[in-house]
Image (cartoon, rainbow, N blue to C red; front, side):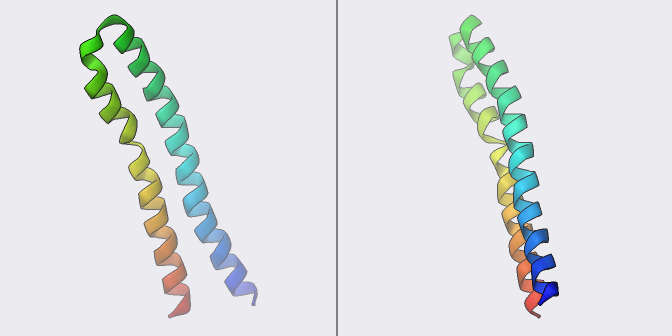
Length: 74
């Protein structure tokens, strides 16, 4: 029973830490992108793409969490 709890904590940490890291990165990139767009409106596309890139960190965290949960069952 205790082993299942530790596995759940590991999966939660995989998602939680990656989500916090993505939020910090997105905050920095977003503020820089808005500043760049204030000076040059042509940078909107690049700013939008660069703002979305940190979300892949959360997807990787989700994949790791799923792998942790599946490895614990086997």
